[in-house]
Image (tube, rainbow, N blue to C red; front, side, top):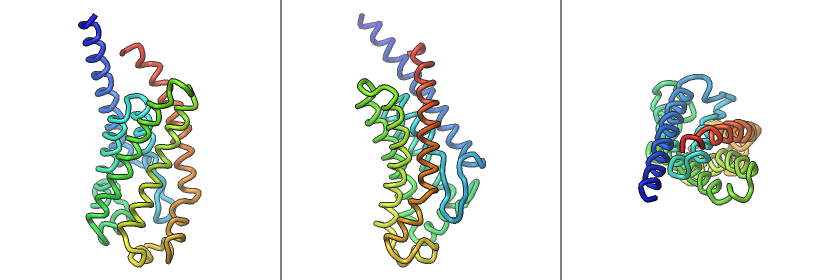
Length: 206
């Protein structure tokens, strides 16, 4: 019985590592191709929350946080002008490099971690709803933490030159608009569909 349990645990770890590695590779590919971002003005819509949501649902909070860190690393690379440069990220880095590191990593890691915890808490009770809530929350958390750190770490005056507005409410309004809603809806629809299908497939591998 103990050997059977050990084998199952090893199998689960192998599956989780494989899925995490594959989703991390997808994040990198999406980052440096037009698939990952949609530019609408200075603020971009990102679809990189999708693989983070999928990983959090399929493999748990640790995977979600790890993929969030990968997402953050690729975002920071863009702030340095590597790959597909982000004008907004480059502008933030020129204002405050340390805060730019925080805004790249913290929202993404927390979004993946919290999404994984949400799915873990509700998956046995809510079925499909837990997939939907988790996928949606990944995008929403990313936006909330991003805006929170932006407002906290960057002075309002320094953001005026980025055409985001002259006060906190205007800055929030410039970021949390139709762009964010599109990002959330896409993460909800794609994240739910892919994670549910992937979960069904890998159940045979665990």
